[in-house]
Length: 307
Image (cartoon, rainbow, N blue to C red; front, side, top):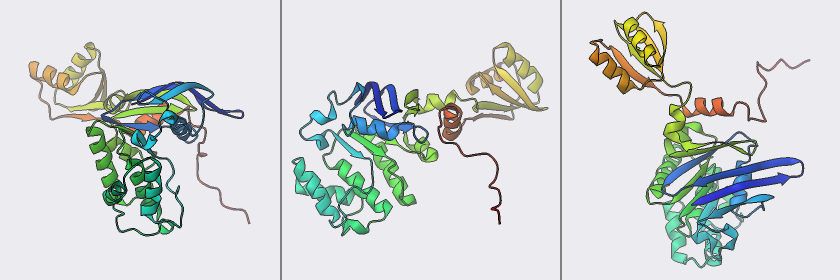
């Protein structure tokens, strides 16, 4: 369990995190989203005690992370992929971490095999994807109940992306707390159960993935029926918003597909189509963070270079 209350952090004139409160419960994968510069990495550093907050507090399993004598048994984290000595082997890198926390040598070999680096040699020659795997192995060393991963799929090939998705969901199913930051919306939509979204250091949303997608303006029910007119009128009187797409097709919001089908059945309306169209995570995220992004590309195409 991770809990933050009124967390703030300032770097000079920049307020990176602004009175941020949230909780990351066990048994689920919680996605951490926000535009570039929103304060996600700073928040993760504050959780781990790598930076000190100006105000507020954050705990891991009920205590500040820095208060644990063997912190790798409480929480494992991957914040940067290349945080290892390039001259060491993957095994020796993990062995140093293990010995510092009283973790057995046998555990080192187990996590290396788990991430697919059992036969790897000097870490200095690792690709980004292999470095990510080594960082994930380090996070798993203490078999902790809490995992924090910042952009863990960067550099991974398709097999690796599927592997990390499956691993994180399996760890959450064991009752662990999994806190995952990523800009890859398609992958986050397949992995996360809950979302925490921030912008300019402030909380924008804290909700389940299902509720977040269902409440978007891009979600609707499409109906095709030879009795589209009477059905539209009936749904409108019940508070739904109905848009006629063509003579026999309706786009409906404010009514569940099950209720629409039941109304059609009770009134003898024929339905050629009854389908739910849900907004994508990317659509909902952009809708919600449109005014919270500090860095936005200019519209239009690049003008030709002058001669």
